[in-house]
Figure 1: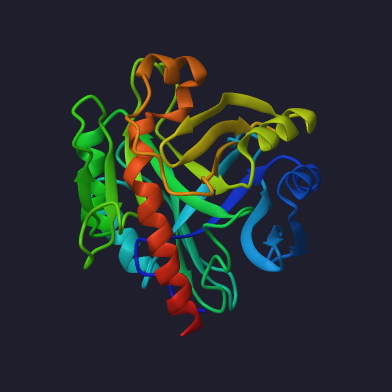
Figure 2 (figure 1 turned 90 degrees about the vertical axis):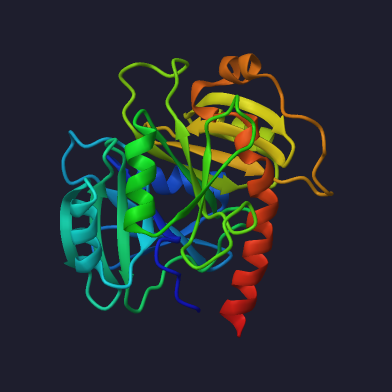
Length: 302
């Protein structure tokens, strides 16, 4: 498997109070199977390929969340850059045996993310397909500092959406042509539609075959639908919360070419769910990620 470019999302995990309950929930929701990983967590597999991990919270006061890890060539050097750029290192680079080195940090807006220096475990073995990761975006109230931070730390090249009514920036890795075809993540803004106490955070997206069926399954399994399924030009999405409180989003991409229709109304989106974000945020990125995934798969099999 090819190595991940620095700054590319390469891994996700969920910090849970009850890992066994998490295995039952996500096993039925996404069809995942599990195996003991390197440490107290369990690796999750979709079609026999690594897609995520479920880990027990070390402290009950920690939030129950899904977190994203960005690839790092040198974790220690990258944590120094994080501090120099105004972020904070929560967990210093820690070796996980032959698998690799991990660290946790926050950006200037308080959003937590991880970095991963690959050893024998590069990261995802499957992504952009049903049952696996497909996108992430950070929500913040301090967009100027956060934009500068990620562009300084990872060398991201930002592309703002041309629609002046939507404040969203796409990130493309250093050395690529910035734009929707190369975007690997993005930045949204916590507006007045969000609770005032909501901190900066990352939202993780999973690909699914059927968004509505997935939302119904979450409810049946004891979770909650935070933003009911709704259509965007590049698919159908929903924001969901599992039965322990970890929030994530799902995307069902259309079978045919994307619709050229204009984005929907902001008021409808806010009523559907505060966390979902503007429809406009997703337009160019879906097609870009599909192209990126094709390139990734070609590179991984080369």
